[in-house]
Length: 131
Ligand SMILES: O=C(O)C(=O)C[C@]1(C(=O)O)C=C[C@@H](O)C=C1
Image (cartoon, rainbow, N blue to C red):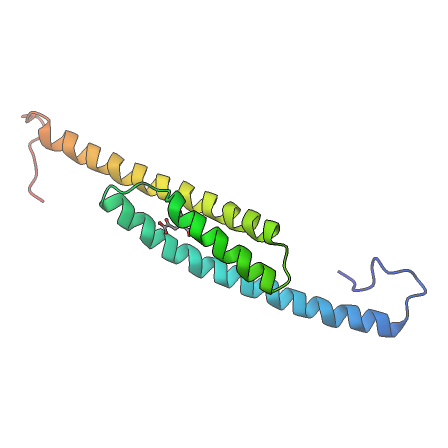
């Protein structure tokens, strides 16, 4: 896409260059955000597996409360709208909880299937095979 697509025809070359430079920094920051989010989700997937293995609930509202208080404070210090910081964290956490629920569902589904196979009476036509 051309850098000056939305600029008025009389925009000077300096303005175009400055816009291009600022957009490059924005692109770098967006890339960093994606990498940071990917790392965060890697860790939360581990939490999800741990919770599923130990029968812990996917959501922990007390932990979320502390996280939100902390992030609101950090946002204020950084002159970022704390309401936006809270909305952003809630958006991410909702997705994490959805992943946790899927992991718990998948693993309990797997356990159910394994249990059903183990308790099924032997079928002479399909003898059990040793693992
Ligand atoms: O810390 C946990 O227990 C998590 O599952 C992680 C996380 C988060 O994404 O930060 C997600 C869900 C919980 O409600 C709280 C926090």
